[in-house]
Image (cartoon, rainbow over all chains, first blue to last red; front, side, top):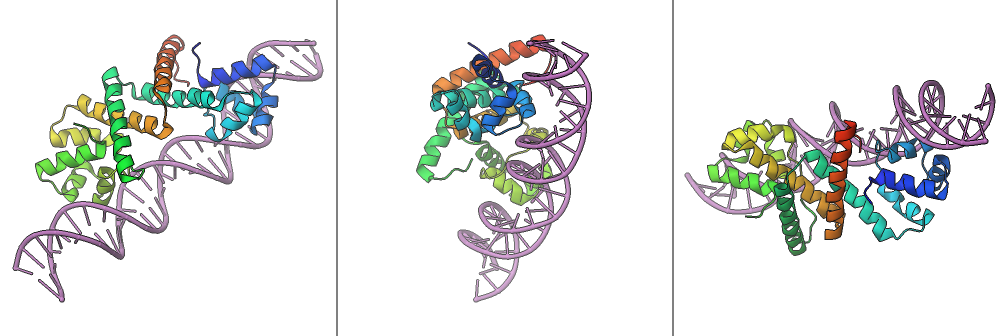
Length: 108
Length: 108
DNA sequence: GTATTTTTGTCAAATACTGACAAGTCAAAT
DNA sequence: ATTTGACTTGTCAGTATTTGACAAAAATAC
């Protein structure tokens, strides 16, 4: 069990026997774009998560986990950061949360 | 020791007794923008990291750690994800690396 | 072979980001 | 009270990035 979000969608789609065109229609996008999404050349738009969940009867929370973990993974991958950097990042998140709870804003 | 990247810059600057205008000039930006950066309302452009390091005689690697950890932290914060999601993300990073070493591309 | 499915290239439109400028607040000095 | 300097905020045009659509090519199935 290890795959990109695109591969995840592709697996769901083929398991159900859908073509790109069929699923794309359900999601409200072009089949060419869906192809790119599955192959990691485009991003899946967050606003379509609900349609995706509905189509495959997925728990929306689990789906979001899959989706957001991908976003974070990309960031980690693209910055090519070390474990040390990750730990620092988690500390910063705590700091952000503490600060924004106090101040009630979203600045960061 | 816990601060945002903006606060980090501000601390460096004030410790040296620089004004916004002075540091901004060294970095090649407007003082108004530097103010926004320090207050978390703008992003610091990666291409200016070297000038920043030089100005304050910082180790560029440590500076990058500070910089990239912030980027990752923001992603984590903005997706409001759980620890579980983070663990999943790290697995995905491993997967990405393994896959792209094999395939030699950067698609994800 | 043809038909269907998938992938790729390209483009304009939409979106987001950047740096600069002007105008604003504020505190300290005179 | 006015001026000065440091900092902050709002706005805006220019830039860069991302998006969805269409056409065409490539791969797969029949």
